[in-house]
Length: 329
Image 1 (cartoon, rainbow, N blue to C red):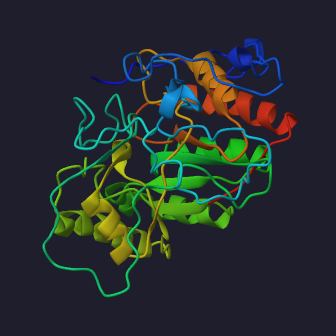
Image 2 (image 1 turned 60 degrees about the vertical axis):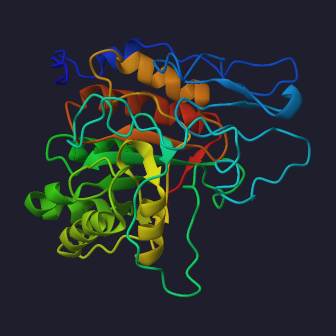
């Protein structure tokens, strides 16, 4: 399925100005919760409620992949980044891949439906003492009580990455750009521009492959080719994001070997689904599901990203007004 074409209006900010920004839904106790929807069945709008043992503990899914931490009194925001992701409440099913996913950037669901799947791996052992992660980081915990992270996937893109950079500069916001290696060579100056602006550049594989059934050697090749491409722009990533949010044992082993932190997301506003999700829906998905420590998934490449750029102009100032601050991971 190809991305739906978008025709800009004479005034590119006219649509932006017309949208209504809704407040967080409030519970009786004043806390912000996401609407419960059937995410595994209907992924179109985020949020499912998963019950713990005996139904005593509820977790909502923030529009993509990670369970919201229980808001128990006195709970610490600096708990392990991946602790909640490793629990049985995570919606990813071992051995399950993203149905119909493609290895090509710009497919209808880049990074859309996370899973932590078992997959084949090389029989070679890791160096003694190497710590292998068991889940990606779903939240940013070292950014203060109201810190959040904005991540941009599938670039660099010569059409949309500069537009994203302009919006970020306007609001003095830092972000994390998860880049596809094969798109770097023709855009080295753009990669350098992203870094020079204070944003983080990370490894998002060479060609946006679904790594679910890749061997360790194959995953390492994807990582190394991307790292080599980024090195030509003097970038040396310390973070890795798996395409489609599809993680596996081999991917985690490869992260350990290359000393890359695996990072997922906790808010997926579905900006990648350009055929069905417009600017206003992207904005409302972000504002409805973002809470302290969220990692927000957006895209600056892989397709027509005009709706994403327009949405950034709305939800970034709205989140700043609510007291959040953005950090580059």
